[in-house]
Length: 166
Image (cartoon, rainbow, N blue to C red):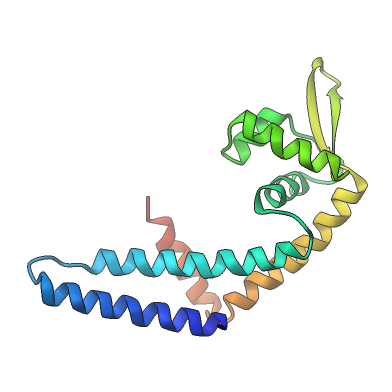
C-alpha cells in the first residue's frame, strides 16, 4: 500500500470513528480522539518511511540516533557517554549497549577524556562520519518526500501547532 493510500485511509477511518462516537455519545466531544488518532497515524507513516531508509544502512533507529547526534556536534568533536545519553534522553545503560554495537561496526570510538583520565569521550570514526554524511542527505530526502504535499507555510504551521502539545 502506498504512503498516500495509508494517509487517505487513516483520515477516512478517523472521520468514521468521529462520526460513530458523535452518534453513540452526543454528550461527549470526541474531537481530541480524532486529532490524537490522526497524529498517531501520521507518526506511524513517517516512522515507517524513515525505517525503510535506515534499513539501507543496516542500522536501527537507536544506532542512527547516536550517529546523527555525534555528527551534528561537528567533525572530530566528542561527547561523554553521559552527555550523549542526556542529549538523546536515554539512561546510561541503554547508551552503553548502543555504543558497544556501533563500536563493533567501527562507526564510533571511545577515547580517554584528555581532561579526566577516568572518563571517556565518544567520537565518530572516519567511517562513521562518512556514513553520517551520506545518511543525513538520504534522511532529509526521505522526510522531504513524505512531506512534499505540505507547502513551506503549512510545514511551519504544523511545527507551530505540534509545539503546543505537551
